Image (cartoon, rainbow, N blue to C red; front, side, top):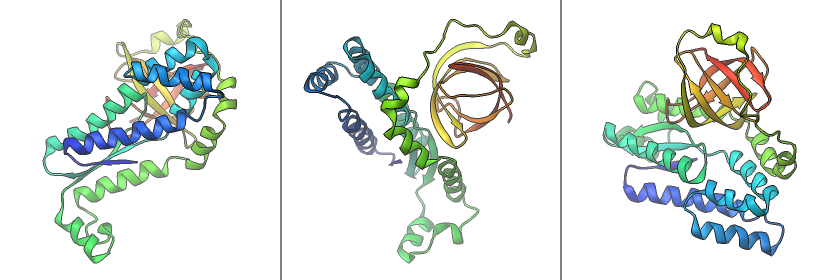
Length: 264
């Protein structure tokens, strides 16, 4: 969890911390000095991690695939703290975008806490803030963050990260050329627009990296390695479009992609 205040320095520090933590993990993956040098050389000449991994994939596709699995299992989120004005909420959103654009991380903003005398007083008294101020805006934000965190199966997330080498070898290739079944096209009630947005699915308490490929008022087309079945209910996060998780129902599923219907 990255907690950031509205100051520019705090934004830079939070991003730098996340970048260092992610690269520290990825630099443990190379099997020999050549792979380490390959990774470092590309890192010095590229600004985005996706570009680094594209370079690595040209010589070591297995290393690139394993690295992508580790990125998917990183499990980051953002909380804004000490926000004084409504526009200060743009700072945690900016951090979320930076992490997605430059590191490929899905790190949704799960809470935003305003600067508050009662919060400071509760710290000084060593008494939980929620006990005395349960109806305040910051209390509601804390509960939202807690619900999001409790929806994450941390043990499974760690296990998937530890087993990334084996999991990467079992990942199916995304079949991007396969269209939706024609039998479903007549069910659409609103036009769909093509998009390319970072997303995240929560399936049985486990986080899985995903991308939105098209979007309408009633649903979306999602690409993800998650194994899904029709009529299954999962949670979908698209940080650039909405805050938090939305429940969706899988309408059809194929290896690597699925169509979902919004339930809220």
